[in-house]
Image (cartoon, rainbow, N blue to C red; front, side, top):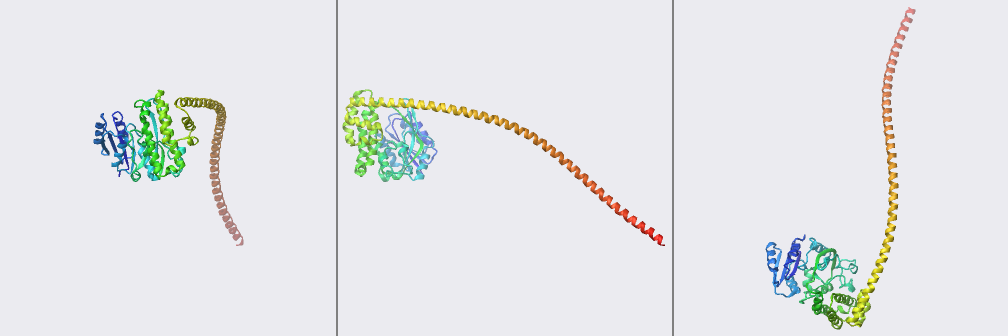
Amino acid sequence: MIKVSVVVPVYNQEQHIERCVDSILAQSLREIEVILVDDGSTDSTADILSCYEKKDERIIILHQQNQYAGVARNNGLKIAKGEYVIFWDSDDYFPEDALEALYEESRKCDADICVGEATKMDMSDGTVKENCYINWKRIPDKRPFCINDMPQYIFNFGINCPWNKLYKRDFLESSGLQFSSLKHANDVYFVMKAFVLAERITAVAKTIVYYQFRNSGSLSCNSLNNKESILNAFLEVKDFLVEFGYWENQDIRKSFVNKAFSTLTPRFLMFESFEEYQTLYNFQKEKMLPALEIGESWIGQMYSEKNEYELSCMLSCNAEEFVFKQYIYFLKKSRQFRDRAIEVKDKLKRSNAKILKQKEKIESQNDRIQRQGEKVKKQNEIIHRQSEKVRKQNEKIQRQNEKIDRQSEKIQRQSEKIREQQDLLNKKLVRAALKIQNSFLK
């Protein structure tokens, strides 16, 4: 039985695909199939995949024209036979026990979705962030859970990426879940719709993916090129929520608005050119916010102080004013962090002084205990010597008692012998007396 189908879209990954596939084939969960979908690669990727197909019978290779990752994942899902399915990326790699951890938790909870942690490795500056893809404070203690248990956080406890989630294949098929054909953000609709429809969701505090973030080109350019795709992705989710009545639920709408807005504003920090910044800002303010129905009524319903401030500014400011407002906000926050750092430093200094005193007190107590221990040791040695002396005296007394017992036994035997001799002598005297008496009578 195939327990997990691993679907990997691949496009021009000749530099990274071998490490990715090797880490999949090394999984401790052996009952898997690996569906590698070549999305029309133009480098040597196809040849590398062909070599792997010959090495391991668990590997299946699909080829398609360049239609992007969403279509590739859908094509892989069509032929998947595993009890569960996971969608991994070709430039990442994975711990050996990743699938086993997800599978065991999914089976235990009979889960439709199991979410795992990930470690982000920024290949541009070398920074590493561990366990930063699940907000555990927004997950109920109950396992498994669903949208009814946390409608206000259903979109906010995790990220809109498929690679840290294991899906039950029957759930995907019965729900008709498919990835979008968009070039960018094609996983937003899939992940968010899945969270809404899943009846049983669980999570594991286990790193499932070593996610390698790479800047392929200008971040600002990517943000501008992707802006329509991102809007369309969230509009797909919004249309789904409206069509099936979820949009009427204020908590679910709140979760959606917070998710969408928190995805938009970080993109402003990617720009060095004000003209590019202004283009994206105007697009988001004039087109994206109205399309997603994010207006003044949501200002007091943001989950973070930063998002609340930025939404308020965005609705009332032009691009130049918003830049200034952001500068003031970050300046204020930097001062707060500085003051907080000084406060923490002072607190740490006091704490260290207290710890030092406690350490000195403990050392003094240890010295006293050590001296007492040495004293007790000496006393024990004296007691031991005295005990040895008493033991030897007792042995001597015991030997003397044994000697006395032997002498007593000897004296007793001699006394008995003397008594026997006396009895015999008495008998002889009596017989002699009778003999003398008889002689006189005659």
